[in-house]
Amino acid sequence: MSFNDEFQSNLEALPNILQRKYSLLRDLDKSLQEIQRQNEQRCEQEIDDMKRGIKSGNITPNSSLLNFSDDALDEQKHAIRIADEKVALAIQAYDLVDTHIQQLDQYLKKIDEHHRRERENVAATGSTTTARDHNMKAGKAGESSNRGRKKTRHATAATATATATSTPNTTSMELDLPVDPNEPTYCFCNQVSYGEMVACDNPDCKIEWFHYGCVGLKEQPKGKWYCSDCAGKQKRRKGR
Image (tube, rainbow, N blue to C red; front, side, top):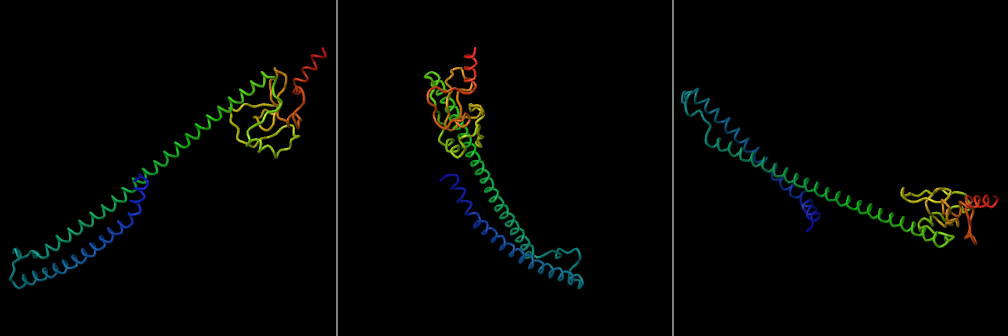
């Protein structure tokens, strides 16, 4: 049986155990009250008998007869024993509840530890995935440069779906998505990779990749394509 099952089983039995102990406490209390009442009556009767004996001269003030009877003393001792039993039962009930409170603390600590490990695993998995994606993107960018650069680039399916409802002719796009601070950025908008992208055919282009919407493209360009910065530089060189 696991700790959780054992704790739940003990917790379910706790109310019945406490109810039995409290019921026994009530019974002892009734017995104690009855014995105390009887003892008070007996002691009052014996005191009256002593007073009458002194008045009649049958008992002297310093006589050994001026003591309670053995029955009265036995009743008092019995009352003390019942009171001690009540105290012992109360301590047992307290210890029982205290034990379950300590078990509950252990149970909560185990749950907190389990959740902490889950958060750490999720964080570690996320970091590994981010690093892998970053390396894959860097490798793809290197491949594109060496092979003359492909014209289009697709982001992940989730990001593409998010951008599908956006207007394709806008010059820049604001993403309402959480962005990893280590994620590389591209294009004139300085945003992360998303949707379809086109690569500038200038191998010295500082930006390299551009979003279709940011450069006014709706489909893959035919032939070589240069961004506005690189195209302007080439025109100035030819003008010289």
